[in-house]
Amino acid sequence: MKLFHSQHLARTGDLVMAMQGPAATLADPDAPKGGFWLGYFLNQWASRIGGGTDQVQRNIIGERVLGLPREPSTDRDVPFNELRRGER
Image (cartoon, rainbow, N blue to C red):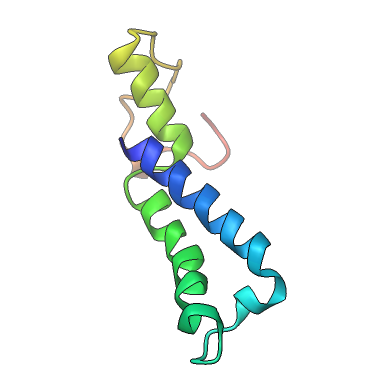
């Protein structure tokens, strides 16, 4: 559901911005719908990042729902503060 919702927000925001053209970037009372669609477009990012990016959600679906193996990781058991920069 999270992946579907974030994609819906992105497509709806992109569509409305394309339909309104440059007026979509206005955020004052004279803007179309009082700037509602600009807020909608900008707030989509909070929802899309907040619960994990779309790529993370796809990994979760692949591993938990489809039973695919996890991506290989040599640092899975190493605490973050012990990781050396630039290594994986």
